[in-house]
Image (cartoon, rainbow, N blue to C red; front, side, top):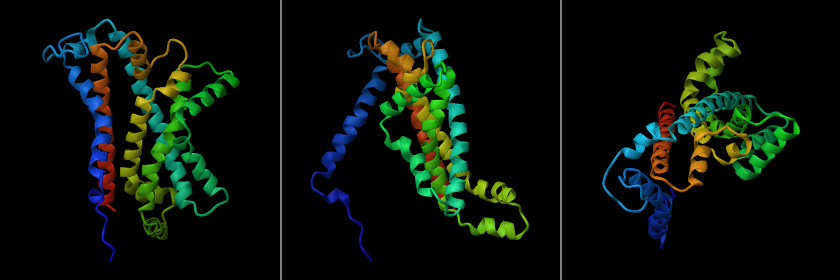
Length: 269
């Protein structure tokens, strides 16, 4: 039996890992720390304070951030739900539908948004809406988010379904259950950890999206990332650090929940 390779023994592995972690997470840590700074300065520490978190909810820009947050949360909830339903249907067709013509092409189309640069998707989406004469706004953001969230929801759902033996459904069919009953009573409960994980992942991807949203949002329509960007163009302020830290915390919570749902699914196979 072949032994596992210990990557830590390779020369330079520890240094490379430390460098990558530093580049990725030190800026986030700096933003989080200075969001509790009592000073208006974004570089000089003047003591611990929650004044900028209070400013997010009660300050002059609070109505803008509140409306933008509602738009982001509602769009993310609707987009992730729709994307998860579509991804679930696609996973059933791809994995339980047997071999059919165009199966490989269908999988490629589902995975395509993961490989195409986001700026290309944003431009193409804007051109499409303009060509068919649709006015950009809440609806166009929702449609765009549903589209690019589908592969993120599909991956954990498909991975979970591939780990479920088809014999459970066949046994249900032998006991006179219909296809719908076998799916609803047998397959869907077994798939639920993957479905939850896919929904959570799609939700946070939609909540955090900026590039595509910025192209298709239209005038007067803001989500939280675009509202933050608009405020930053006037200069980085401590309240922006506070709201960025809150978004980071939400992202960490949702990614952790998605990971735990996957772990639960693996343990219950």
